[in-house]
Image (cartoon, rainbow, N blue to C red; front, side, top):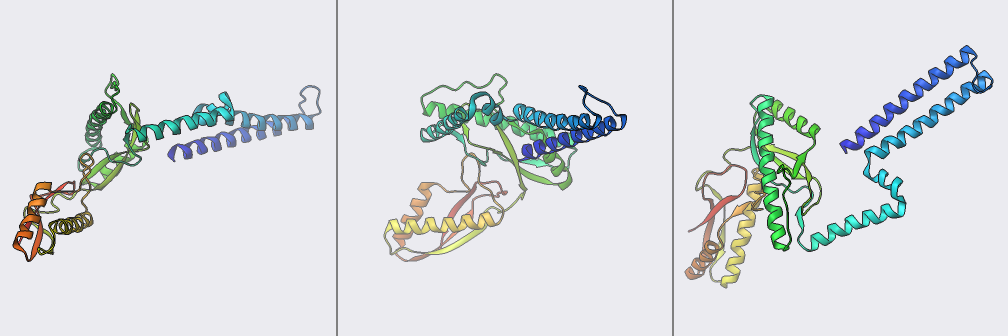
Length: 308
């Protein structure tokens, strides 16, 4: 979107400047009674105006040609070939998606980090650059993992940089964090689909950092589970209680861990053992979900279940 606005702005200024110069030149020639190609001064002025309009169109197309891959492809290969190229890219995306070759989906968080906005701008920028180095390591590791699953090869770039960012977005992020004067969670997110081996750009999402959403042993939610039901139904009711706990955690500002893709964590064995314990009691039990340890708003939130 930013790129589109900049292109329109440049084209607007370019057209306005050429029109102004053409108009001034036409008026000057008209006053001086100048003649080109033995034309009368009035016709010479009209010729200059027409040439100016043609120059605007030519420069506009030239600018579009060098600034847009789509326009360049249309000029060099034609409409049919352009359609074929787009179809190939789409088909490649679909094929890799079906075979598990998608590394990241659009707007998918890659990592999270707490950035201290109370520091100077250069120090804030250094923190973000350090975060980007971790993003590159994570992206390369994920490429290797996907390549291994697909039984193919992935060769990391020599400089170790597969993920980048837009300079204007980085500058805007630094300015925003500096103005907020506090600690914020910064999430680099993928801009588009990222396929195996692709270099890609990230955008940045920020959220307030909450150092302590839950303290150790803090109760999150409780519910009553009927132990006279079948063990599978008891287990299902416990899972529903966990979903309600997840909603509470989200409302308190917690975000999902982008690597594990979880917001709440409890071992499967503990969940099964809790269900068995409730079934063994053979009565309705009050079950309270509690925080296992002090947790900030970066997931996952580790929990355990207390039975009364």
